[in-house]
Amino acid sequence: MIFEVKNVDCGYGSTRILRDISLSIESGGILCLLGPNGVGKTTLFKSMLGFLKLKAGNVFVNGENIDAWSIKKIARTIGYVPQVHTPPFPFTVLDVVTMGRVAHMGLFGTPSQKDINVAENALERLGISDFRDRIYTEISGGERQMVLIARALAQNPKILIMDEPTANLDFGNQIRVLTQIKALAADGMAIIMTSHFPDHAFLCSTEVALLKRDSSLIVGIAENVVTEENLKAAYGVDIRIIRECIGGNDWLKSCVPVLS
Image (cartoon, rainbow, N blue to C red):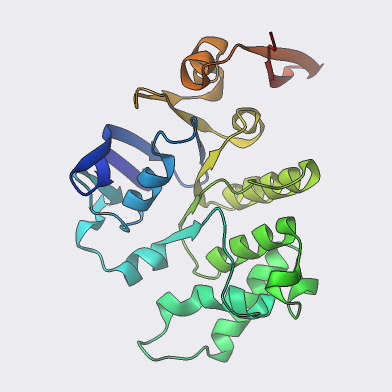
């Protein structure tokens, strides 16, 4: 496993939000973390990234405990795409993506031509090179999300952690982002993402972790985890899983709420 979370407790101050959490992912895998608001998904991400000190347990990359790693070393290995990002100044898209190279610069370093080339390659990889000179704060939400993914790619990470990468996006942009996530995994990157849409687990994940209201965690393939019973326990509403054969052994699965 390239990334492992073992028996982790995490929280703020003396308060433990999550206890005894374990999950792992291989290179080329996509783990989709589901669960209602307020159960600790973002807290878990911050702990995995070293932003919050673990209360117990360990995080490993390629079998190495990252507890003693510097923030810079973590940033060179693990890319992070936050839910929301609005810079205080009107940077160009290329400037924002180039910020992903900070972990590779010296303390007072400025971007080299190599850093700029890496940033431009990240934009090209995602098919958004046309944005390079546009002002980041003036582009659409979907475009901005793609830029944040490009910024994370500019770090040259082996692992990508994405906190609700499709939040606040319209249906078309959600699918475009999910398509890029699948393409990155196909290139060998390990991806952990949160989502408020259980359907996303069917669309692109190789494994699912469902965090329920009692903070218990169910981990496995989507077929076993994303069930009507588990979703009701997690979200407190009745949901039906609709299945339709779309040819051969391929099935389309979707989660449909039952309104009373």
